[in-house]
Image (cartoon, rainbow, N blue to C red):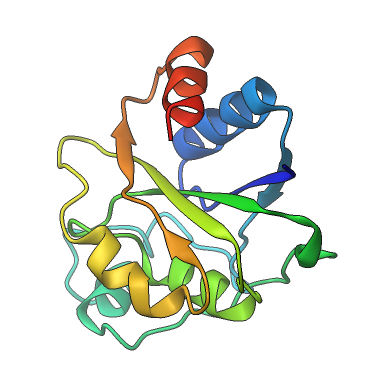
Length: 156
């Protein structure tokens, strides 16, 4: 079974977790990058007019991404990592999922959060996972260890 760990990380926390998971599983790694990188001001959730606030207020928002993995057809499982924003995945994750042919694949969300749970993440991601089986996601602490991630992934 060939596995991809794709992730979006705004501050580096989710990136560290994704790299640890990919290492534990011997999986390929892919960073979901915005076509226009986020600035610190863009990520200011206290500012109602910040880019991230405006994107998250609009469920149809699909921020442009800078490419998708080559040879997506080779993967059976796709772990998708992201920080929790407003109790769900950032809409750029929907952009990624909708940009890939996920037919016949299993998609497994994993997230980092400053305190909230996974909320309605699966409900919001489901329509973007056309043709795939979407498993329930899990939120991890920023410092989750490789053995914890591996045990979770192997138990799916």
